[in-house]
Length: 314
Image (cartoon, rainbow, N blue to C red):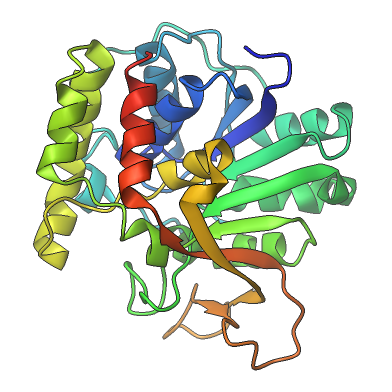
């Protein structure tokens, strides 16, 4: 791990695309993964924390710290997405049960303790799932907010609409109240909405290139992607499905792959019709101050070249 490696914590609900994001981070010497915090989302917590450990072992990194966090959203009942990710959350490859242990202690305690210990501004949070753990940490210890160097999250949608309801993207919809807490906290935030991730399609040729790496990681990743993409291919009529969460890690490795605009993002928490909608003031028609860099475009060829090159290292 490079001396100057950027310190990150990955908060996640694996999920096939979360798994690929974790692999990308663990394959990249520019990033020092201080720990992984699991949250309920794509599947319940018992599976997301298990899946996070399976992926660390697949990457050959059983030394990675994995903590379990929130079992349910702040206010609402948990909504999961087995219809996309399969019953395990990682359907596709047959990954062995992990032998690495789950770290003791709650993910929220780990977040607070780590952010209070590390130098202010030195830790980046990478949020790949519902924002419950991060919101709970901010509620429990508000002093962490100015200590977070950057929050890069996958969530929301604007021009693209929602993927779980007409208005809402899954991660925000599952815990809109947590997203509201996080986006109001004054943390420098980069948001990867569906507008970007729907441009990063796992075409047949791109999956074949990953399988052709000829490694256990390449074979497992290809199997994950082929299972994961079947749902969105049918839904959107595309060759391949969107690869959402790895956009967060790719941004840390090469921000030039993305372009967007600094604007205000608010989350709907009152209306059942639009619950979890990210209301993005893209055209600056309000006087609400910008609170997030909202990405709109991705160099998808560059993104998949980076991903494939990094996976080849594992």
